[in-house]
Length: 189
Image 1: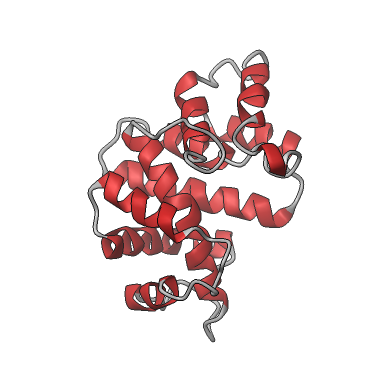
Image 2: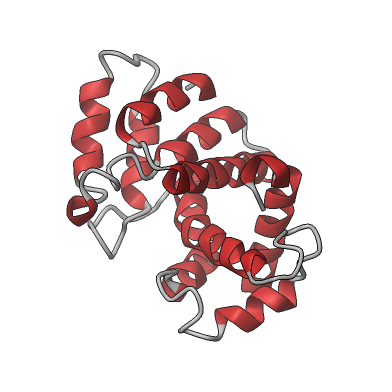
């Protein structure tokens, strides 16, 4: 799926700037990981990351449930919207909102980085620089161990996601910080 079409689609359902920025952050990180994992279609990964919270603003109590309905209905308007993207979007809610377990590399990556990008963003906002440019892995690991800090960021999901990918938590954090650094101005961090 072309990223510009993913942007048009998300615009129909998400109006809030904070959620749009989060979706963009996840998209940037997904594209980075796709390239890091030598995947053939980084734009597909980026689009899946961008669309992952398409239902959250309108249906927070049915998150990752309504997404399937929305995305299936939008196939008519966006023919390149495929089952691979839909399944990835659903799987990021595994064990919390549904029982769609991440299986593919793209699904596992989305599951791992969604919550982590929020934690890293929160870590950046309490830094004097308000940026990821000078952020170190140890700073995020330290905040990771404080449940009250960015309490809405599910640490178990992050840790389970790292394990699914076969990565040490510190490696997942390092790669995610690196990904966010590539577009820090665009992401506002």
